[in-house]
Length: 159
Image 1 (cartoon, one colour):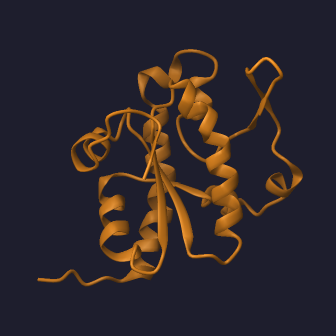
Image 2 (cartoon, helix red, strand yellow; image 1 turned 135 degrees about the vertical axis):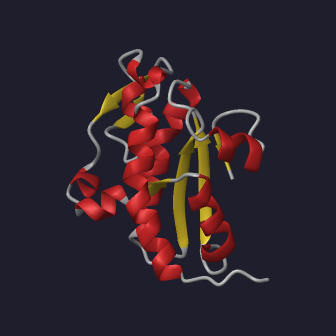
């Protein structure tokens, strides 16, 4: 039988779960290792990355247009999802909205480099009225979603 969808209820669930999913990711042992890993364990991103002339990246504050946003706009720019959230998006919310989903691990340098960009893009599109939304799963703790459901073979993976 076809699944009955109640998009407003699913959206409320996603918003409620994003904080919990993020906190779970930050409890991973590797989030406690190293100075930078704890900054990349969940969205929203805490700072921007700027490329240096030598190809390295340095942390900096976000531009004013991000920092002066309402808290909901910042926390909902990229949603931290789990397996059930992904299935709800796939089965009910993807009919009229394009969902960009990032699969990452917080200790991966390439994932870290993508983190701020995904956040800024998610922030812009969520507040532009377009039907594009961003979600992310930290595969260090969401292995069932990343490996079994989506078959991720490397990180970062944007789908």
